[in-house]
Image 1 (tube, rainbow, N blue to C red):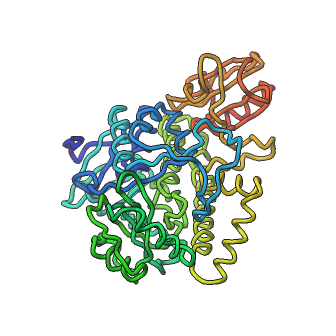
Image 2 (cartoon, one colour; image 1 turned 180 degrees about the horizontal axis):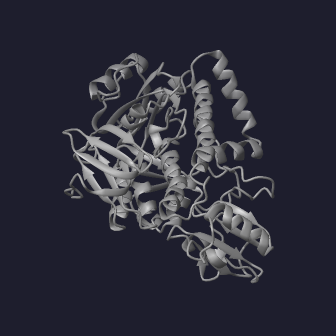
Image 3 (tube, helix red, strand yellow; image 1 turned 120 degrees about the vertical axis):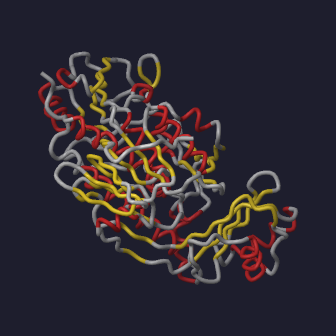
Length: 483
């Protein structure tokens, strides 16, 4: 559908390796700034298996910022927020400051299709059946070689090509961490009537919290079971693998049949040493991998793309300050490191044995305290992230929720991927930065401060009411003003 023909002389601003959620979102973000983008995808067709993923609060907010939320909600199923951390059964704390305080269950191929179509509608070009085999860079750009010998030229390359990233390996970037030590089977399938299952599942979960066999719609069950050994993840599991392991653990295979999708995952945890080498950058699973506990992986990658897109576009359009592109690693590497740590912790809490079970009981008690429950939920859903922008009020560096403004909501003003000055005083201006930053003077805005400067990713870059101070921060994030 999206395949197009290119010649060796074709030059792009950015080539993106990988058209998963991260690559597709990045392509769309770049196209908002008229960047010439080519996305190379190794697979000739979209993935066929239908794996359900969860979009957390922050990812839903990002989709709302770009006008994509409604069409995404139509294809998913909302579930209450809560019970994210190590699957400990606790409701979400009261008063979460987001109108999107829920989890959206949605098939991963649907997410990829929505984001890819959005990128293509904005003018991105997607080419399937292309395997990257070589990368060379110089002061002016990057040459990408494909299987078969074709060479393409771009000013930047971004590797969004997954955990086994070819781009990362060609760069020689280290990927330290821990290899898989355990293996888990996961899928959705039909089974025997529920009354024959519930009691046995409850019995197993008394000693093994990793075991999940729960209803997921009419006659369909979501199944998560520890595997007998670490296997080759390149080979998908079969229904017989599930039946055999169910019989081993539960003494019955519950009559499972008619699988919707089957997959396996390990607990490998790795973080790239660098997210940028010259004109080549890494995002998503190419930069970090971890167990899927808490459902953070896809969300983390999409959020990487949202952070990187406007910065790379600014570099290409010529207005970015010298250090702006470096803030991608400075901001996202610590976020990824924190995700890896919380999945390590969750894995330990879910492990078998009297020690982990004691820790789980203690943590379950502690989560009855609102502050503990709130902290863990904000960590999993990424709404607690605060980038280090220097000293200032607590709101500085955090994302601004979708507050009410004149004639609508804040995120409706961010669809074009530009900065925003939201001014309750009516005395401030974006001046020479108005080609990059929109302005709204609104004394009714639901803010507790006089004015804020928002980056295109919705994070608060400045708070105050002084024009000179504002100009300093406009220069910091959006470069030299236009004459």
